[in-house]
Length: 338
Image (tube, rainbow, N blue to C red; front, side, top):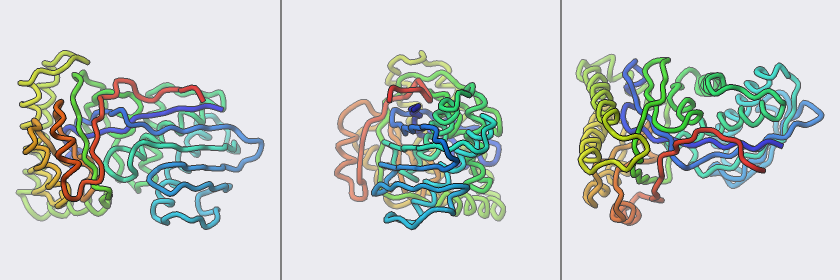
């Protein structure tokens, strides 16, 4: 039995624009998905999901996610969860040259499903790592990140970015531009997350931005402006002391850029009333800056604030289901004791 866990992420800057070759900076957070993999003697895969924002389910199947019984859980969430697990199993079998390997897999997660915090990437990264280690064929981090990206690319029908899986694998802050990913230094940023309990339709939101960009020059300019914000943010992070507490001045400057980024994302039509309400509640409570994180349309916002007022204000904001702090996860995927 092998147990691995991988962190979720927030975007400091750059979501949506990264699709068009602009840079983005996601950062891993200490909310993790844990996957346990134990080889079987047959070629079946038995999956038990205890969290993933589902009521919990157990499925045993062979050959694909379509070969499984009906279960008492919301069909779209089950399809999403099983799709990622299935893709992770295929990548692990391929990496270990064990096409008939079977597994008993258990998935647990602290990360809300579909909320823009990288839950699927964390499950896929931890799943591939656990399964390949269980087969005696552990991967180096670069290959693990690449295979996890390929799994997400398959499930998301070509809409995936390397950002989420690379960040979940490596931990810390990451710079992504096209297919180029690199870890960058970052201080201990005081993240506060607000979650509205929902999830946006990533495919529809990405398609909506694409249509705007193709039809209106201002939308293309907006995407480029988000890239400029990312580059300014990178310069600020480069001046900070890695893994130290950031200065108030740095937080204010980063916060200003986050505020601009949120405004531009809202102009592209990917925000939502609940997200805007949480952003303004955080700012009114004294946060240095706040923005949506992920595809938008629902899900989460991220704010920078080390004081208690912001999570308290968010918890009383209409439409906010949960508010919590999340430290920067300096360590990416890791093996843990079962």
